[in-house]
Amino acid sequence: MPLFTTGSIRAAALVLSLLFLSLLAIDPVQANARPPAIPLANVYHSGVNLQEYWVSEKLDGVRAYWDGEQLWSRGGHEYVAPDWFTAQFPRQPLDGELWSGRGRFAELSGAVRKVQPVDQEWRQVRFHVFDLPQPETVFEQRYRQLERLVAGSDSPYLVLVEQRPVASHSELMAELEQVVAAGAEGLMLKRRNSQYRAGRSDDLLKVKTHQDAEAKVVGHLPGKGKYEGLMGALEVELYDGRQFRIGTGFTDADRRNPPAIGSIITFRYRGLTATGLPRFASFLRVRNDEPVPKAD
Image (tube, rainbow, N blue to C red; front, top):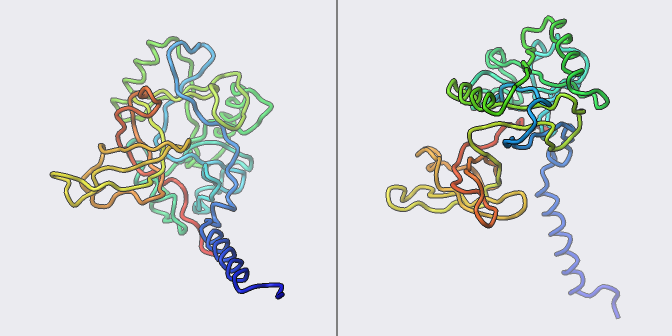
């Protein structure tokens, strides 16, 4: 009896083919990416002891981590900044946000994601720093060190994010209303005695007039009526695997050219349904803040 039959050879070939296809499906850039271990924010709610926190503006930019030599995205990919942009940065890690000003996210992300940086575009960008990655030091002390570092740098592209006390919930809400009216995205709260630790916690809180979250696009649903021939809604999937539809917040251009299947979008919503899904979800934008992968 032969050791390998025709059927077993075909089966083995099929398995190898499927394995090969699965390997092709892996994005090598994603596979090799090493996301920096950075703190992430929870959502503010009334009842938080504000005496423990400092407040700052929430910048509508892209999170960036300076390791002393290069700028990295939240996903662990390099932002290819011009040499002159980082030439006078301190040679120690910094945590912050690349930002060009209020309401300019699309312009900013288009500039910083390019493999070949454009000097004219990067001259509109500043690295706004808000923390020092020193795990054993509390934030209030880290911030004082950060003040000295930025003050001692001659870089015009390095900016300190101002942190200040806030007295009460009513004062916080008044400030939120003021900055949002001026075009800001919201506010951030940082616990003064917190350590620098990765992941989400109440050490860092975002304060906004609306809630937002991210989801993966898994389908396009056709439009009806005035949207016939266009995209009517997106089928999206949350990180826990649950799916729902988003049908509002799109421009006509979005509907003609909807976010690609597999892309990550940011959406707004107002609370949760009885089953825990976002209520009144509305499309905000594609979360395209990761740099374009370099060619091998």
